[in-house]
Image (tube, rainbow, N blue to C red; front, top):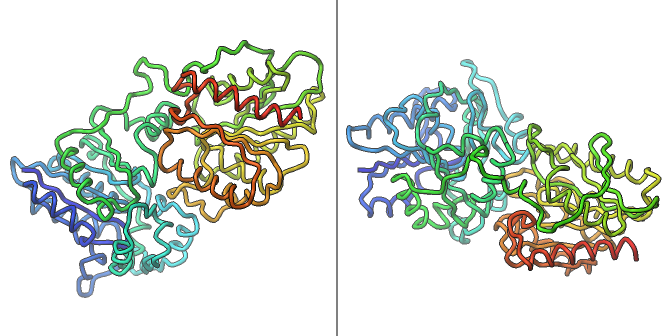
Length: 508
């Protein structure tokens, strides 16, 4: 018999699992929903402050009560719940058949749960509210979110009004010690098979995760091991409330070892981002200075220039670096063959907290390019890709007179729910109304991930509202990164149209 032990996330308790647990029980499984101390279980009389170790002990107690020979225990941790799940599994590794990471982070030894809180302001609030106690455990509580504050903790996509009302009404304060005490692991848990359930309205899906593994993100390399599988659910951060039946079916399949396997980056295949560009573009003379490459057209100039800004985050260890990736060099050569300087560069977007640094790198590179005597400083276009999209806000909000066009391919145009950047200046949707007549060319992938597509739709809606000068070029069958993933005639035609649209703005 499969035994599911379900551990809820911050501010919530056993009640959120009601419908999912009922479905699993109906399918013949044994189900335990853990009441964490202070979040569904009252504090013991005279007990001290509640911390992560308290919650780990809560989970261990349920494991010990359920563990019997022949029973496979599947530990499911949602959101914050993955921290006590991993702490307990590390100490009871032989009793656990599988750990399920339900739309959660990947906690590491020595790191507190607060590090996974997406919103920087929330992290600061946690630190400010913490109070000392005699035993060294931080005291105090973090109040539960108000009804309109839940998106700061994760996407509410798929939640009905009634479900959101219930989530709010039953939410409990989170003991601060549970967020501030570092997780301690011996390493035993690393041998337990694992499954990740990705809620694609709140974060990346399997395809995007594979791309991140291919790029070489060190922390993600372990996800391509044979013991790790993945599932997707097209919903927000609380699937036990938005789609409990689908979640129950997914957990049942996960318990039997099902799911998608990622391919290791060194498995003898060419990673998606390093496959050939979909156009056969002749090489052009290239000059490298610092973090910037110029792909040069014929003649002395001055020529207009197109600066291509890569996406990310890209780990600092990635080799080759983005300015040598086929998509960027392909576009740079294409515009150079048509009389414009194609510029590729490397910027330091290594994490979603690096947008300030990345934006500064881009601005510095643009000024160096404009100072080159072969470049017409009054005719420059900026072309952004994927996770570079938020940087467009810098240029949309106050476009300089020399900026003739902003283009973006499959961009992220508003901070994603898990990034914690909602209040930052890197929000192109909010900046668009200040762009005036600046031409914007948007290349939209028809098979985009749901979370990114939502930001693009929001941008298009805002463009219609404020009368922005927006041209949309659709690639109906294209995926995120279609230039190396989908070398179809339709995709090639879209690239030709996009290049033509940008160069027309530069030369007009």
